[in-house]
Amino acid sequence: PPVWEGELSCDGKIFHTGYYLTFTAGVGAYSGGGMMLAPSAVPWDRELDGLCLSSLGFFSILGNLRRIFSGTLAETKWSSAARGERMTVRRTGGRPLLLELDGEPVDTGDSDLVEIVSVPGSLRAAVPLS
Image (cartoon, rainbow, N blue to C red; front, side, top):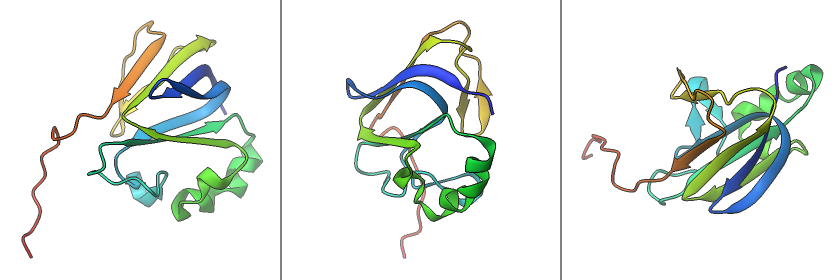
């Protein structure tokens, strides 16, 4: 699988340096198709939940697929997790950054840095009263 090389930080504290397979940040526990990548994430706590998976092999990925849906991926030796208001991805070598927002690819150009920031009150949602 393709890997990226970088430094990931949360609120200014580095929580991963080196090669990684993927990094996700969000305000909800679930993403596409019922994957539970951030089981403790809630949209009202003003924090992003981030999960980084370091470089791992194809068979390790297959052997841990169930963890993607059970919310236990953060318990593996390949993961680094963080919670905070600002996540930063800094490319330190290799391939250009690949960014996806809600399943849609976003061109980062030649950027070596992407910041993901929690902006409380910016997401409006309609919910039933009862």
